[in-house]
Image (cartoon, rainbow, N blue to C red; front, top):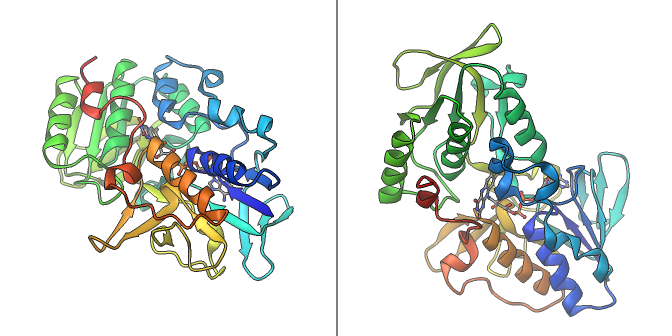
Length: 335
Ligand SMILES: Cc1cc2nc3c(=O)[nH]c(=O)nc-3n(C[C@H](O)[C@H](O)[C@H](O)COP(=O)(O)OP(=O)(O)OC[C@H]3O[C@@H](n4cnc5c(N)ncnc54)[C@H](O)[C@@H]3O)c2cc1C
């Protein structure tokens, strides 16, 4: 059996291990788009603050894969899935075949239309490469704007503030999905952010943005005075990385649609982690993951099911949606 796993985040790595545990002879290949070895994504904010360098982020779980006979490939972006041929094509022109496939490609913050023309001054916080860009660009004088409704924006604003930057947090309402923060917690975080010296524009997105010298002038969507900033860090919700599935026949909504065994509509193809959209039969809600440890749990289950276990994911909601790596959000503002 040949198992192909797209994405080398916690979901992909856990799935590979689960496959190996069930099938000692399996041919397992894990492929990731980023050029670097898999790393601990939740610690990217510590790269921004300078508390960690890139080398100290390596994911120890991934380091174990080679010893288990699991092949890994870096810097290979999946561009097309052919479900009839059971192959995936990659940007460099290579093609890999599979008997069972896991889509575990995570997500990235969507850059709002109004910011798309200012690429060098607008940086999403999604990858190691971009965390290093944010740190470098933060050396320029001036206010940094952080855009986003929830957890990602809060930790990013705090990191930049820790670095000594003046921070304007444009917080366009409540998170829509995949985010554990809301209601009372949200209010507490806002209050803590203000106490930390972060200027919060609650309920505001980007109204207008225009270039000005080395930076941008952004007007909050709720009105108010324009703010001159050196950079906008985009920390909006992570939208699933699923462009390569277009036209493949794998059903997608916002994310890859899966049932309670993490199966897509195509036999032998599964999805797990932040890219998967799970339908909860109990509540009739669609759910997205946000969280390192829950991505691991989903990945592990998907790996078991790829080898035929047929297990369902729903034990408790918290097990599979927002088990976080690191301390709770509010505690992070106490240091
Ligand atoms: C700045 C930041 C801070 C965070 N802080 C926390 C925290 O404190 N606690 C917490 O629990 N969670 C945190 N998270 C969320 C957590 O990192 C995610 O929930 C988790 O990484 C999701 O795992 P995943 O395996 O689904 O996807 P990911 O970790 O996103 O991995 C997916 C991988 O797939 C690759 N990929 C994408 N498209 C393709 C393609 N076409 N072909 C091949 N490979 C592809 C990506 O490059 C990526 O390496 C944070 C996230 C960010 C960005």
